[in-house]
Length: 463
Image (cartoon, rainbow, N blue to C red; front, top):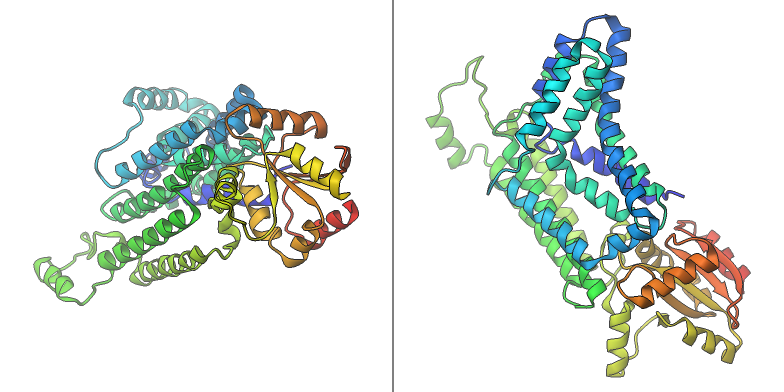
């Protein structure tokens, strides 16, 4: 089962990848190819455009398929939760961010590009093969910008279903390819799109800052598994809010001073525009001032909204990408117990099913198990947005509550994943199970739901 949140995340990543700087240098190459090989009428143009899009989709989707086959569902889950993998992905985001900031340039090896280009030209006469190879070339040459999105989807596709990496990259690549499918039908329109140039600097800086924020997410994943307690929810939220502020100030400072002394000095020093020399060489030749202003305002509002979450209030759809409160993790619960502190809200037996079952037998209650994961975004959504609903929390208080993490490092996590697989036939997360005091299964609920009544009905029936 592919949940809606992951579905829309994959589509959004594909749409966002369209504005990455690596896409624009390929536009004149692609336009030139379809201009030269666009004969044969409308039917041939449609076929070539479909094959071009298929080349893009196939190249990305093969990455997901290879990952699924080589790693598998359980391996993907452990891979996603590994602190070293998360730190490596964070380092990748930082490396790409520094590339966008202009410290250096990351390039696909020229030999790879030369061979792909040569194969495209050699097979151009066959039409079909040439169009597919052109799509594959497009995917490979833009991979230095799309790799962070692809890597993120592969890591988030760790909820126990091997199909998720394939479906995720299929959705991502289809969204990414659709605009170029339509543009391949009309090479003259494709040729008129903005080319790489000075305006890309603004796009690069903004994307670079966004990737710094994404890196914090993966560092916080490693923090959760290792139990450092440094990159907490408050630290990540405050950092994201600051990044939003920096982006807004950058956009305002770079694009808004029209009519100011700086703009006036620049206008005085610049020759009058001619038909062949546009007045603006910046992004504003393509992106008007009102749009730059709106983007700056949007980042400002988003940063303020993130700041409002510092007091612990849930932030809706953003919440799954934030670390849980430290006291909601096994390390945090243990630290509070050692200090003799009582936590607010529901009491959970963290990674202690035997203790929960013993408490259930003693009190004549039933056990509610939350099979969860450190890197499970759907689990975070349920815990932050469903479990906190007063009616749901009231029902949960009637159970003995056990929270079992299955994606950490160590024997306890492997044992809990094995228990979930052997007892319930799945390692998908989240999974909710209700047991009696002897460990017999009463009922189960798989996956994320946004329907409050559906989850309430499950809890009431289990009692």
